Image (cartoon, rainbow, N blue to C red; front, side, top):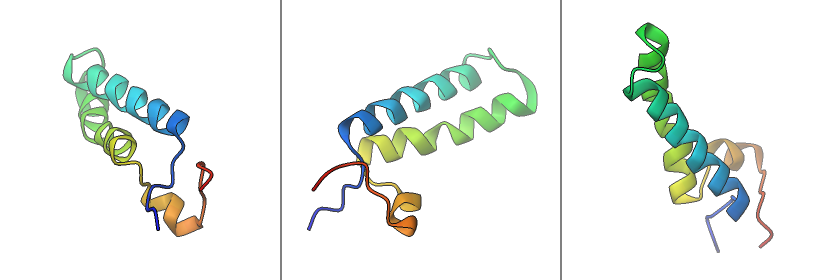
Length: 67
């Protein structure tokens, strides 16, 4: 049984979003508290995209990939 619950397009979007959020936070494009928030929250889509498994998808029994 495969634990990957994301399609390749979903993973690409998550990785790109994670990189963008991390860039905005770490490069200082968005300063202050919001910048710190982006530094932290940017890891969520990046890691879930790299791993291919989303805990929220698993909880809601959603899959974007066709197994």
